[in-house]
Image (tube, rainbow, N blue to C red):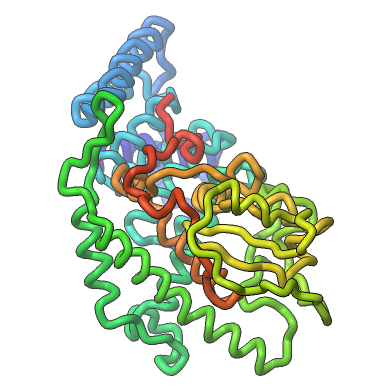
Length: 424
């Protein structure tokens, strides 16, 4: 067992018992082992704290230069001097994730949690590492522990949603990928969906920017590859949502096929729209506008805004990842007084991508494949929403102009969704 494991075990033993006195029920040998195991290293002196802090700052500078291996060496030296500084373990965890050393990242985050159990960074980073190792159940447990400490933490709430969506993806995977469901209940995947996703993924690698221009390390995905990748994901989700909608119709339910009652109580705290994100029965009767569902072609952002909640024709539209949907049949949601009235006539993409439902996250346009290239891949979650809107509102009626050439859009500001991924 390495020094990290030994220190972690000692911390856990010390937490479970405030002293190491021999228990009457223990055999002498076992009691001795417990006492030895729970012996913690002494706290650092002020001089040692200062030396460790200086090393940590040196490691931070290397990290910002993307010299992750060198940064890890420095963080390790800092930890050897001051094992009790949780921020060093946070930084080691993040650095290990950059190096794709997932198990080490998870262990470092666990140490940080033991040292600072009220700091959400530890739970977030450990859950991310477990997610990368496909330990979704354990990742969810850690995420929920973090949310008990900070119920309104947006990053943890978004990660919890991502983990839920990962389960949904497993459930709609090709037969054999989700053995807990009978094969008769699983929608068939497009024959080339997996191959398409894998092919495009290989085109999207780590990168940076130079002189303000985004630089791809490998070959940037072409427009065709982008389209095929998006279509493969949407098709997988859409088949499941169509199945759910059919079952709802058979049950003569007025409810939408995809509801947000899957949000946990703590997740709902991160969703701020009053009255939103809840099941809503469809109105018994709606006076639809004459042009309802008529194709609109390619619209500019200003043209889409004309179909906001207060337009006199009562034709309501919105955009998800560039697809424009006519939502006029749900004035209870998108019309005046509805919980989503502030979103009508706008593009919702960045908010759905980032997990924030406020107006200031609408009409923001970025090349999301660049986010994927930088290791923040939330395209599957976004395409899940796109598939739902496609099923719920009978397909798109047009395209929004900024998304026609997504590759020309700027790099996403990942700091808006990475508040717990920063070094300390």
